[in-house]
Image (tube, rainbow, N blue to C red; front, top):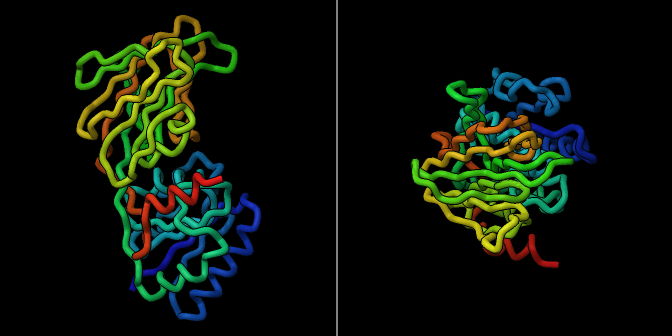
Length: 283
């Protein structure tokens, strides 16, 4: 039986206490653990977690992430290539990615110890940034990519093509392209729909559009999008999962398609997306 890996965000309040409880629980049951200490997994480092934890790759059956949604997003992007199920324990605010709240932790850890869990595969997106014929970067995202204006800029225009066909030009504060998992994030705040994370599709949502037409558009997961920036001396930024940022220039192109990687999110027998949605959104 392979080990269980624990990746905490040590910058989160109470992370040490929660990790100690998890460690004690599995130690009592003689289940082997790998715990990323403060020097082994640095979330503020530009070095990928897959590189920081490269000795773990072939030895894990499960990764437990202790933190908030941002912590899980970083783990998902960096470790999707490992194809290991991920379980989130929430130390942040109201999040949609973490399966377990700290108050419920022991009951669900018992399910893990006895093998009473499964996983749900979730779509991820691949983003390539092109400047002319040069590829400046390639990024993986679980939630969304956002093209938005800088803090002191005027409105920007983003032209969207789908499979080489022109779809729309959005004038305003920018555009969000979200996965189903990301539909409950920034896209929701901008007026986008909530989508079951088991689906394969993209949600394109304008941010504060300067138009009467301000509806989101659902794009098939098999489609490829090209978003072209019309900046003209205006500051424009590409953001990946709210964590990776890149300054864009006029006529830069952002190519978005479904990634070949899928993240496996641990779930339990009584999991229901709709029940969870009700619990997260209720006042």
